[in-house]
Image (cartoon, rainbow, N blue to C red; front, side, top):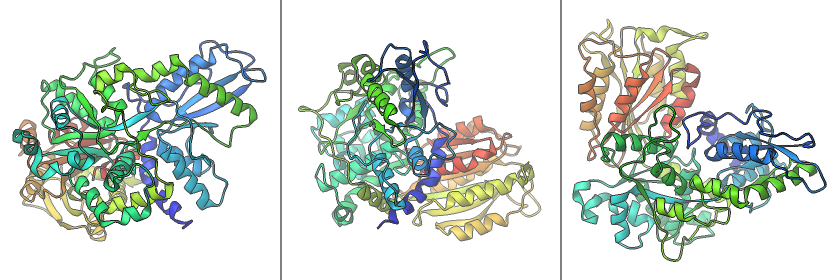
Length: 598
């Protein structure tokens, strides 16, 4: 059993390594690196104790500001002197990997305090330490919280209020049983299908928590989930039924919310997206409703509030809480432990707790301020019921099970083979870099997915009658065959982007499978250079999402010559997503994020 955790974490490595780059502050439009040295309003000469803190990214901007306040205060430590606190940001999963590997390769100071999103990560780190035969860095099963945010089912207000009118409903009744009948089961057939979005649990804390909550709802308990439960056919059927209604997975629900806000404000509140709900932490519902995730003009701290806000729906079985633990690591010496205790006391004092509340967090005792409930909607009578975190080994086994239970996909890959792909990227060509990244990305797909491959450029001597060609027919996933075919492709011609996307989307629409995620994946290093089909407006109409037969387009813009703005328009028209790899060094990261959608 000791080897299992290391196998699990090795499988996570591509996901968490990619997420390391995504230090995006949720409430702002900038990328956060870390607190600058000396970034304090009033440094004190007697502060000999330095305390390094690593925080999860959704709260890191606030922690930086609070650290500045702490550093400029007149607080003194027990035994004399004071402390200077320095905060850096790192995704919780990536921090788990880094701590297990001795904190190498992060470029960040070695922390004495770790503030992940959830105690789930402390359990996974404990498994890693046990597998390596070393003393656990996180031996305690309970850590105090600095803030909390329960998992909720977020829905546009009209839909959420209609669901609430039915009384208390469970996870399966909201996310599973309604899928076949759609909104007709709620008296609104004109609303069409019922599908929802969730984060990939290998990449996201909220996605992992949503998966755990589904399993707890399946066993109808709020604690003591076991490996035997995971193997129960009734449990797997319950989880499979819910996963079947996923519209597509995401590497970050913030991106889903940003797209939803943009569509809401552009369309007066009407969205063409096929998702009826998103499973995510309550904090994000508040930020969305306050306009923090809406498009902003220069100089604005926040955008406009959406025309149609979201409401938080609470399933009757209970929910999972993201507890934002305060973890003091073994790297802390005696004085740093004293400083950590004082910094924790500071963070849990009323003024600082009000700062967390303004971002949509509950307090360190799980209390919800009135302003939060006014924003996201009321709790059930009697308050929320919370699931206990499962044993870390059960979480590991759950993720292994999820890979077979998640919704499967039909994926048609369109790979640019135009002449510009011969351009050099270091000591390789663009095509070689893209091919290697595609091969690594394919390795992360599910064996039960169905995958096809097209090449495209323009008419060439090897392809005289069409700008695109089917290289591998859409069918059972054969990674070796696809990888081999990519390696043998010939590069020449210009870029028939619009014609290829149109034809690929049409083929998947004709072969639409309602039991699968249906998606076109386009990898290109350029822009449309095909005069026979140069009508972007018509393409956007042709690929516009049909909620009854959703075929989504996902694009990777590879190298600086790519027309990312146009690819983004194409993806958004279909409710897909464009990934920016215009710096070729980021193409592996883009592929990992892409694959997390399936």
